[in-house]
Image 1: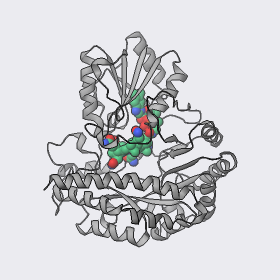
Image 2: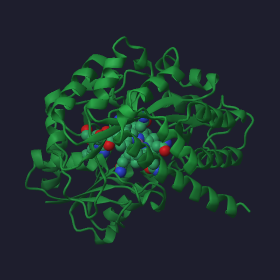
Image 3: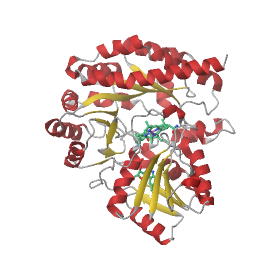
Image 4: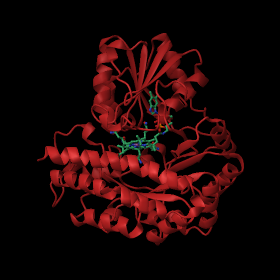
Length: 440
Ligand code: B12
């Protein structure tokens, strides 16, 4: 049986992310799982950000898609065309798990939840022409997961990825992770992770855990100690909370994190507005002194970037400026995204009465305003975020921030700081120039 797995484009045409330096981790992982459970399947992978996927030319009996919310409209249209050609379509991922009935008319099978427990059955049913409409994979143990397959791409990527845990102990109302991956965090055996990273040909990685150290500071120290002993010449970045910096062992954690190759961390600042932080149930994960936490991470030689949301219903117009000031004060960069209530989250239920009618899921991409705000129009919020993103990333600001990372991280944390900031800044500034010109 021939199977194609497709990662859909980000944005309608995928233009915005042509230069994305990371392969879709989920496809590399599903390729590993396929090899393990059905090695005879002839598999190809398509990253539709990098290459066109034309349904009428697809050479496979079965095509599987992974679906995030903003990708759903493209996937449904593409799936309909494939099925008109007589191909079988399988859909999986967070969006179809949240809304399986919405997705069902566009597919032969919907995979709800994680793939591990059901993928062998799905492939064997597909081979027999007996696909069921729904398979519920639930949550799976991750103590023996397959390694990613990285050599099926037509293009090359700078970063590899590794995953050491699934889930997050926090319950933020905007985040899909708690709902999708369950309340309890699962960890992979440390030796497995270390062996996987050592065996990879890549030197730079994204550690895609939802929270690289907040799931257990003790276990993270053990992991980083093992990495520092065994992994040579490899560096990585990941996402994490700030409250872990209150932990009595936080200095030890940071020391080994750095020695284990961590060069930069994207921390969930989430909002600069206290009312929004409450609404997002993200207060406790900030810890008792979040500014000091940032300084502490940097002093350990690890670069910091803030994940921050703007345009929430509690936010005010002055919050955009307060973020500019915050970044100046801390000499730190931030990645601002528009507050977006994703289906299946608590925030979605809270904001549902305020959603702007007529918008498709493709607007839920972190750039568009998708709900009414008490004082700011959708246009105003969209324009403000474009300006804010551009203002945050000028070359002098980027260089100054790099100089603030302790020499303990030299040179890789400084190089990573540039690699994370510069391409983002260039893209944000180009987008701002085009957008503001179009607006006249
Ligand atoms: C890596 C990542 C990215 C990367 C993707 C890189 C790439 N080249 O594809 C990048 C940075 C591009 C990215 C972008 C975005 N992301 Co993102 N991302 C992640 C992250 C951290 C890991 C996902 C991953 O690869 N996991 C590893 C794989 C192995 O696991 P998995 O995806 O869960 O897959 C399992 C099951 O879901 C299932 N499965 C999934 N797909 C399929 C398909 C088939 C056929 C089958 C059988 C099974 C199956 O099987 C797998 C094994 O069990 C998640 C957090 C998370 N925990 O999911 C957020 C996450 C997926 N992202 C999210 C969001 C919101 C975004 C953005 C919209 C961000 C923004 N606001 O700007 C953009 C999307 C832009 C767009 N226009 O589409 C949300 C999704 C919410 C939603 N409802 O869609 C998540 C969950 C984060 C969160 N905290 O809420 N992201």
